[in-house]
Length: 150
Image 1 (spheres, rainbow, N blue to C red):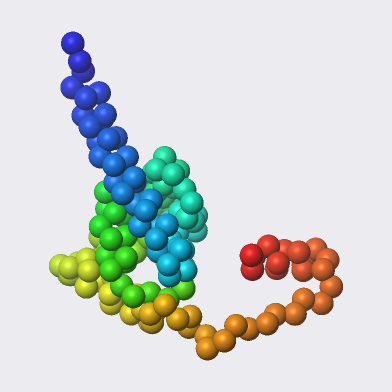
Image 2 (image 1 turned 180 degrees about the horizontal axis):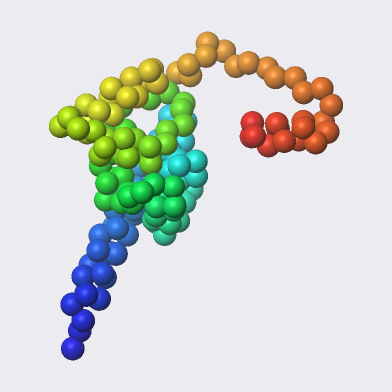
């Protein structure tokens, strides 16, 4: 005899796992083709498997009062992938949180297009040409700056 609570938990887990599996190719395509790095509250989702994506999204409950779900993040990520973005870093956790805290009933695609309009510049970078940065000395501070830049 099976426990209904366990069956429900297993069903919800499979839904989250399926959504995370669907996120993997979208994140990879955005990164390879457009230089878009998808993050969740600072943690990059690029080159992560489905379990790591679920863990990164569940980590948000330590930051937020309410937990965001992979099931909420997938439609937002699909809306992001429809835009013609240039190289940018997007925090999916902040977008999802802000969208679900809004009082007005705005379509998710319209919300994403509105919020990401400044970076929807096509595949070209925001700067006309790369900028050189010179580090004098490669001591402790220089190494820290190099790590941040990389």
